[in-house]
Length: 269
Image (tube, rainbow, N blue to C red; front, side, top):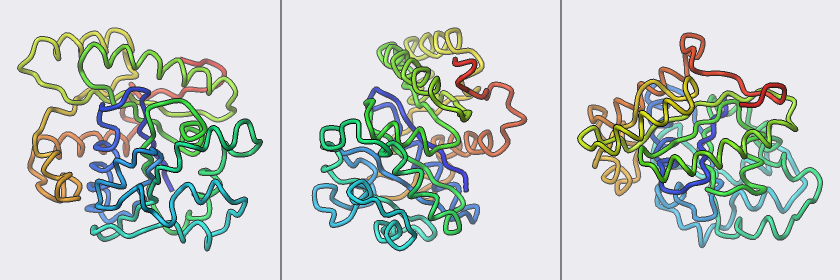
């Protein structure tokens, strides 16, 4: 089971869209996929028509228990309207976890231990992270094999990326496992000078950590969101759907992509 997370400490850069769009392509290829919403705002949960303010069971339930068995974890999962695509929803109560748990030992591995019980049920897990450092992001980073960092191609977003990369460097120093990282330029509008210059600055600063293509601006993303469907399942011929298919191809063939590097506690960034 491969586990990918989409994270950035700046909001509105395309984390939810990235996770949902990749999931749509994966299920189209016959994969069994789980989406995990780790954001108290519940954007992904809302995307599929559920209310994060009124979820009887959610990821929050997993943090309230020391049980890590299939029956307990699977009881949190809900079906989406897409076959072979399930959701582990968020609830707004997740916003209280840092205050509740403090430095309580072992709570940084809740998600990793929970997902381990679902190993036989899913081929891929995609995690949507909240835009701040805390117990939820620590859980997501501990659980994932590959980290996607969506970055809007505008200069304020690049400043937010600096904070995210510093956070990753700090966390991986205390981690014994390697984490594959790829920065994904999003919301690229080739008609604007600002977007072109931002993309250039992104590549100059982060080099081969940046994916060699972009996710373009596409109004069809909003339409897909209104329908509660991944864009590829609404219209597979849109620019956005094609771009995320290219990103998926990169993720599935990492050995052919030299810009994907392992981040470890030894060499940092």
